[in-house]
Amino acid sequence: MNSPKFSVKNILILHGPNLNMLGMREPGIYGHETLQHINRNLSQLAEDSHIKVNFFQHNAESALIDRIHQAAQDGTDFIIINPAAYTHTSIALRDALAAVNLPFIEVHLSNIFSRESFRHHSYFSDLAVGVISGLGAKGYELALKYAIDSH
Ligand code: DQA
Image 1 (cartoon, rainbow, N blue to C red):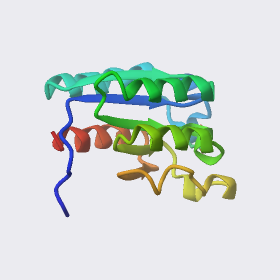
Image 2: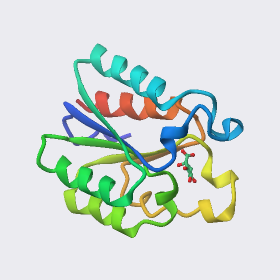
Image 3: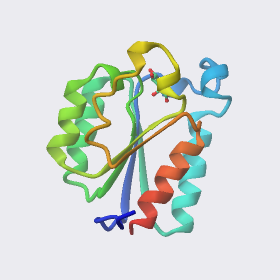
């Protein structure tokens, strides 16, 4: 594998719509862990590696787009994003990531390819450094470790 081409200090972790409901939302698919718990683990992991992480969850497409634009100005050098349902619908969110031109990993808790056919297409995957789908909350951790290792 080629070594990553970027140097990462500041990571933005973005969570799309309905992910604030984790823990109570369809636990058979998404597990029992809350978003707060997932973020706390990721914070710890980042702290151990002296990396700064910022978290943002929103249910509105426009707020997520605005936060991505802000990332171009605030020193963010890597994004980890679970676009949730916008994965399958949002050209606008895709365009925002293309506009800021920051490397990103796309994460899904569930395996989107083993679910309904409307979930099989992502507007993000071809732009992403990589995609992790189906490994639950561990997927965020693996994405963060990858980003940290590219430090
Ligand atoms: C999801 C998968 C999407 O299809 C779904 O709309 C979500 C969550 C996941 O993490 O598995 O909200 O991105």
